[in-house]
Length: 229
Image (tube, rainbow, N blue to C red; front, side, top):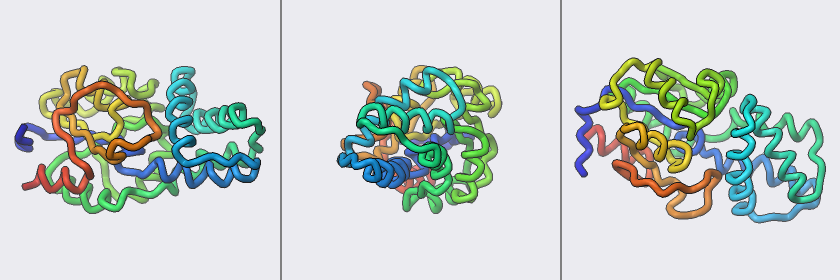
């Protein structure tokens, strides 16, 4: 299907996994922690266990920085160790250093010249604010889990974003990597969606979902090139 950019006024983005390479950030923090406790696992195990566990913990509620602490505790339960308080605090503290994908900054800069940009993110205000220092984009709207009171894939996260943005759903295009957290619930609400297939079929830090995005691109750069053509 042809991507008719004139249909849309606002692009909404997931952040971690789409703009930020959260899988690299997760693995880079957790591997040294696990090794200190003599736990030797492959990166794919870390990502798969994170995907299983984060969703369960988010359903229990709480701030995202506490979600990450609890996920690390459950790594310990699974692998037979007790993380230190320093290690627990270090996990959310590492999030602002998680790197953007190589194409993110240039693509966002180009898209910002044509569209209003917004973020719908499963994180806390303070954590995203520090990440946004790296992204360097003045998002028109930022809707975090702290503000909406829910974590994606809860549709209330998208309802809250649409209320804040103030544009009809037909004028919004949601761009994300996670089929589970983003593409499925956004599609169910009638939003047009772009799936950024960062993992190319490999394991990831989010559960899978059986959903068909409106459009698919391998990178954010490819999407920006298509939508701005």
